Length: 187
Image 1: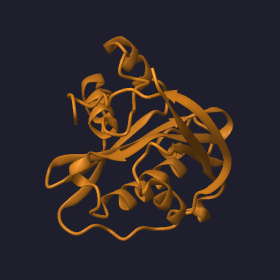
Image 2: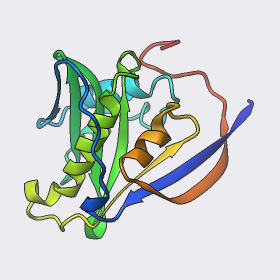
Image 3: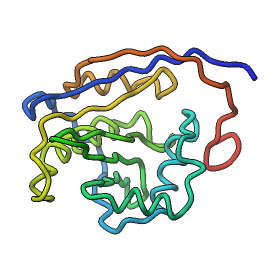
Image 4: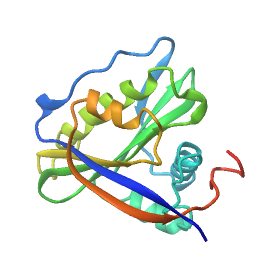
């Protein structure tokens, strides 16, 4: 099996003041929290957003594993809808001592390039900063962080930097060159 060289970048914000706003997209775009943990919906979002950018780490998760993850305290999924259709999502995963990871973020391919991504990232990052307001048992957020890689969408890194994230780590690895998993072959 052949391999690809993949660069992974880690980025962070250490204050809510770091967050830079995005222009709101045109049209009927709204963002809502998926308040009922749903393995089916979360897997749909994961496979649909990550299918063409090689998200594979969760494809083998069972229904029970998805449920266990989604039931963890503080895990939140925020979904962007364009005229009622899911367009993308941001998933927040709080860690210890006020760290909140943006575990997954992205748009379904048909919705990319329409300014929805910047808006969703800014909104999701703001929700990471105010997570303790919705979850009083949690420590206040001290840092919001994420990682992206050279396999992600061509505008991903630019979007993170425009929202005020700063680079704090870079790693280069060799990964298997697999076919795009997608929600179906070729997606």
